[in-house]
Image (tube, rainbow, N blue to C red):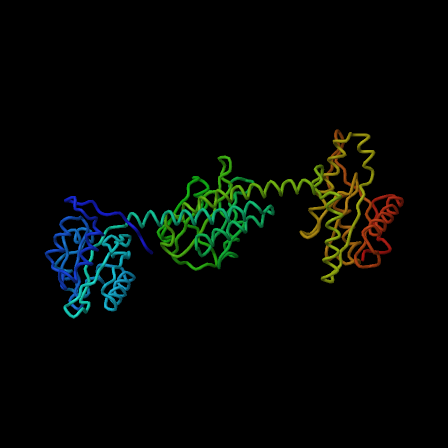
Length: 500
């Protein structure tokens, strides 16, 4: 990288700035002297606060001024005439750059070069010098060494890197914002959060935890990295482990070595190895809704990474809130408020999808239509509050006696549909009898009356057995259901043909 700097303040108000005076010395050397005198170099060094040095090829550093020693922290006795002095003073990359520059001067001693070098500082890397060099030649015109000056540009480098990082951070965060806020599907939003965190922070794994409805349980809802399956099985209480403590205290944390943190939760099926962790809370309107935890090799993360993670969680919080709101609105558009079952709109749309999927994969789909017997007398005798309670009891009993893949929709009034993916036609009588029995023994209690069971007329059909479309399905099971009610109710009638 290249730099441009102003001159160092002069001690004597010289007519030239440091670069000008140094370059004039360089330009006039062939006229005044071939081997430039140390006296002249000393005079320039006296006028300016920069660190000056001279290097003789094959002998190492042969002269430095006090400012050079002060800037670099070098010890004069350990520096002069030591061919390996630069190796001790500068980073490996810096030494390579110096050797490359020496080679360039042997090819062309008339050049002048400036370049940055990182030092091997006693307290660790981070001190940067700008070195400006000119070549020295003998009477034959052969380059015998270099001389130059150094300036401490650590602060300039630090600010430059900070601005560069900030610019890059803002660019990436804008992309993160576009990715997250543009996604309304909740699970896709959650997956995007961990994916962006993993890539942006150059991490090994990232896991997003959300607080559950009980307010005390923290569950992983999305994870990325080699251990995502194990991490997604993890469940903890608020206050437990790193993520739990971050949620409890609403404060982000940076841990350079997880082995030194006593409160870490051991994740089953993952190696017990040291790592670096950063974790930040997701806070919405003063309430913590979750935490984003990111891991990498030990000492990988710095304070700037924690600041970046906090920025990501701020965007992620909005994305999760937007997706949750969208999901809630979508859920309400598909759910019957009275019973909690799906509504007629959802039934019509999803049954077509179920049939298409079954057709492509070659398995049956059965549909039961259930009509509650004598709901009108309940409403007339005990009021609609009792009738509503009867409807809710029916859905609760049905859900309790169905598989996870089965689903229920309220078609209208006292009529419900039960969709059974993978259930063959010959199993329908058994399933219907099981549901009718469960309804009969349920404890529905009308207002001011004794508990009683629920009775229902049920019809059913199965794909693929002859019907061509959804209208034919509904017609077939409606006719069968009517037969069941005409037979006295609490009956099951299997329709004569089914869906295709």
